[in-house]
Length: 367
Image: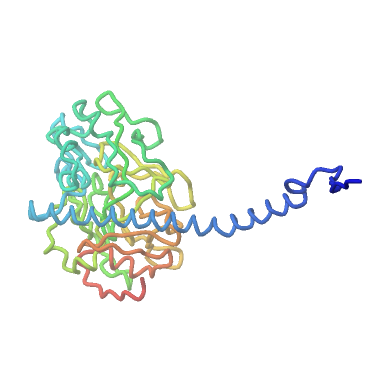
């Protein structure tokens, strides 16, 4: 009898796939790996954003050097009709309190030709005010170089507001300006609203002893400002007697705190903080383009110490530098170099770096 091989087969199908327990274990492992990798990915992304931001500031610094080569001076913090008694022709539209007036063009608009924005320069009518109908479209332009990728407050143009936060109406329209996340340094002292109808001001003569003196202003912000950029400034490199490498020219101000612009200053405008501290509030139009370091105006804190506010200082003034990079922010010095400044920077060092002609001695180990 012929025999045949016996075939054995199971009544059950071979097991395919995972059990529920195995699947949950795999998902848990993946979750742990993602949790471990995510901080590294975020840190890498922020590092890239930091490189971009510092590159933007370096290009702005180099543009300022090219401007100086072309005109033998730096661009003005902003350009306003000059008056020493508050009078001006009717068509100038001067603010009765600050004496800010047309045309208003700021340092950022002055640098456009040196940052490969020639088409935008040609579209601007620089002989007319910022708020002229002829400039309406151009002044709302976005200039990528003036934006920091770490800023979360928005990149889009913004509408100007008045002292109570209502839309500002100038020449029968509300100006809308292109945004900037970078600002220019006015120095230690501020000269915003008080550089108009107020006849005199108090300034520090020695920040270490809190000594001050009274100066006559007569509309001239240069009698108060000790930094390179202010209303109608014409600063030359030789005026920076503290040294270009020891003087802050530009820095960050994220729109998460308040709106800034590359365009300039508009009569009657105010900047308002987007979040509040016990120390901050709205401030005059000059803070659309400029910030200061303090101390200013003889102001002292409750301990008698001059008030200084470096990058991210918790006063959160609209007139101070503010960055969303972890641990500090970037500044551009007068020689075009860019440095990262820690939130814990020595306050006196910050004040020393902000003035251009106070003869302080810089000790970099306090940075």
